[in-house]
Length: 138
Image 1 (tube, rainbow, N blue to C red):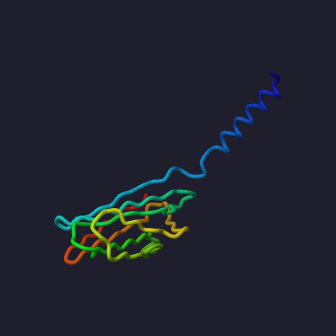
Image 2: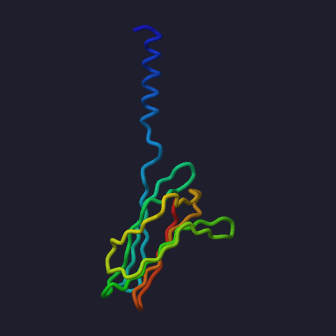
Image 3: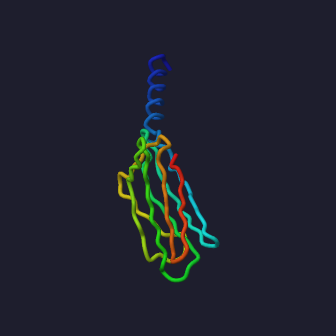
C-alpha cells in the first residue's frame, strides 16, 4: 500500500468517524419530589442539551395518596435573566387520579439556557393536601 493509499484510507476513516458522532449528547433525566405528611408528589423531566440550550422532551409525574380523581399538578419550566424569571412553559392538569404516571406534553421548541439558571417547579394538590417540588435543570 503506497503513501497516497494510506492517507486516503486514514481520511476515509476520519470522515466515517465524524459522520457517525451523534448530533447531541444522550438525554438527561432529573427527578424532583415533595411531601406533605403522607401525601407525596414526584415529577420526572427529560431533556437534551445542544448548543448551550436544554431542550425539554417530556415529563411525567403525579401525587398521592388521595381518593378519587381530584388531583391537580401544575408544571412550570423557567429560567432567570437578571432579576426576572421567564417562564417558557406553564400548564395545569386537573382531575388526576392518585399515582405517578401522568404525562406532560411539552411543545417542540421548549428550551431554556444551559447556564444553570433554569428550573422546573411543580405544584401538587388534592383537597387539603399539597406540596411544591423544584429542581434546577443543569
